[in-house]
Length: 84
Image (tube, rainbow, N blue to C red; front, side):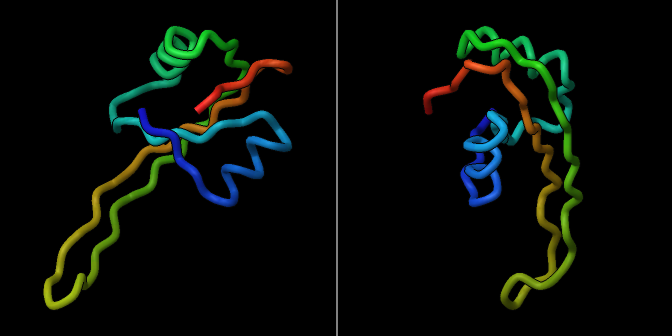
């Protein structure tokens, strides 16, 4: 599990107390909830999963494919915070 820091994820974190993580492709919502509660001791209220397919195309002189990714947007209970 890796924390994603972008303008959009920072805005979600400040306004809605939602954090964005990149997770492995086989991880489900239950496993994400248990991992966050064990690692950070927070109460997870909502989890949204986004599957991003890998793109085909040119990378310099070569053709190839980017890896597929899975993102989890995690909403925490009001008052809980994750310090990164």
